[in-house]
Image (tube, rainbow, N blue to C red; front, top):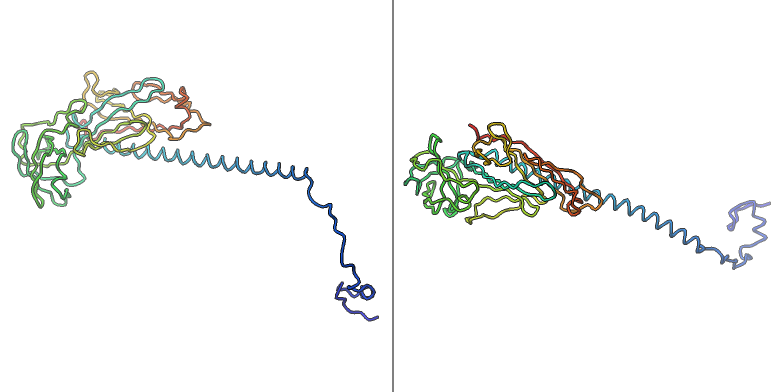
Length: 352
C-alpha cells in the first residue's frame, strides 16, 4: 500500500479513509447550537461580585487617601509650628542686645481661662539689629540727641537710599556701652559712607507699647563716639487661628502684621524670674521686666481641616496658672488634631 501525507488530515494512517472521503464530499454546512450563552442568574451573580470587588478596592483607596492627606496635614502643622517656634526663640535670644533689659521685652498678658476659649499673649522683642556692622558715631547734637552723624564701618552694609532710613528707630550706644538712647529717624542725608540723621521722638508703635516704653536709659549722655544700630522691634501674637509677626517697619503707627503660621490655636509664655518663681505676667506685683531670666513658650497648633472620625480628648495645660484647655468639650473644636510645642529659653542678655 502506498502511503503519503494527506493534505486534509496530515496523517499516513488515514490515507485510505481520506481517499474514500474526499474533502469536497464533506457537508458545506454544520449545525450550530443556538442555546449557548449566560443566563440572567449568572449575569446577576457576576454583577454582584463585581460590585463587591470594586467597593472593596474603593474603600481601600479611600482609606489610604485619607490617611495620606491627614499625614501631610499633620506634617505641615508641625513644620509650621517648629518654624514659628524657632523664629520666636531666635528673637528672644537677641532680646536686650544693646537695649536695656528693662525695655527689651513687652508683654500683653492674655492667659486662657479653663474651658474651650483659647487666648494669645502678645510679646514684643527689642534689640539692636546686628545683621551688619552698624554705624560709627562721629558726632551728635542736643541732649537728648536731635541729630547724629554716623559713618558706615568697614565691611558693613547699609541702605542705598537715604529714604530707606526714614521712620526707622535707631539706638545710639556710647563707646563704653553704659549709655544708650533710642530715637526715630525723621530725615536722612549724606552720600558715600557718611550719613546724617535728624532724630525725633519714638514713633507711636514704640511709645504705645505695654508697659510704657521709656526711650532712653540716659538722655543726658553725650553721644560723640560709640556705635549706632537700627533697632529691631518685633511683635508676635495669634489672631483668628493665625500666628502673626509684625516688624513695625512700614512707617505706620501699628505696622503691617505678616502671617507666620496658620492653624495656631494658643500662644502662651511663662516667665522665670530672678528669684526662681514662675510668673505668667512679668510685671505683676513688684516684678519688673529686667528680672526675667528665662521664658517657657507654649504654642498649640491645630490642623486646618477637621477629621470627622476623630475627637480630641486631650486636656492641654498651658502656662504658670495651670489652666486647662479642653477642646473635646466643644463639638466645634473637637474634630481637629493638635500638637503642643514647648521650649524653655534662657535669655542671654538678661541678668548680666
